[in-house]
Image (tube, rainbow, N blue to C red; front, side):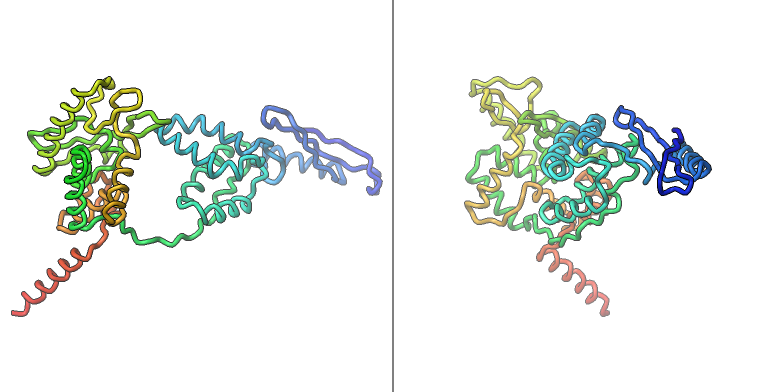
Length: 385
């Protein structure tokens, strides 16, 4: 820094003072000037204040901090971020930015983005995008990164207000009667693989990715136990195994006798079917549910396999519309409805706590409500004496 004396007609003395401040920004030195000081003393006081603020890292309101665009800073942040998460997660995050965030904020200089810009972005995006909370969180992480790199002086996304969304009551589950109707149809009309797949999905409460990742070595037929320790997703069409959602998702669950019997039969049928096909199995590909890809190799099911089968059956028979995850909802709801302890239900579903299970899946059904009121009335009547 330095103090410069310069001529000024408006000054009584004919001179004023200015302070020159320099800072390295984006690898280049840039000079900034604060002028208009009437005396050398005033200029030195300002210079001392700048030294103090520079030492503490606080130059808010005094200097422009970075000329970098938001998309450039995002690229730098993403290099670090992608090494902290599963590859499938980093791909989804990259897609989120490129589809929803960068088209709006990408070309703006990050130091010029204000809380007003951020609030407008969140408010407008919240009208069309369901998971706006996720958008805010990830965008804020980029600003926090810029803050740590001293490219900006504050995070303009922090104080934005999320728009309120009307929460619709979830109906993404079958009643026990609807479940039996669905399984009866699929048993009668579909290949045995599909029957075994949906039977296991309904009677285990597995997540779709957990089901796709199962190998025959994961089931203990003698003790009727199923081990869940991984998940399966796809990146650019290629199957990728990853760890489970969290440490509580690594679990071993008991299966009912009929489901085990169905899986035994499916194992025999699938071995016979593979033996009859002129295909090349994948290395260590003893997956429970597979298909033959275009290249003639046996692969784990593609991501939308369950979705497409489910939609076709629902449409053909006019059944209630649910998603594949609805079978997990169904499993949890019927467990709680029939009196299974929430702690045991949580362990079976791979939840961190029983409260999570109750908050997420404890949808009441008409049959369950009738059963509850019957038990209540019986209890009151038994106390009449």
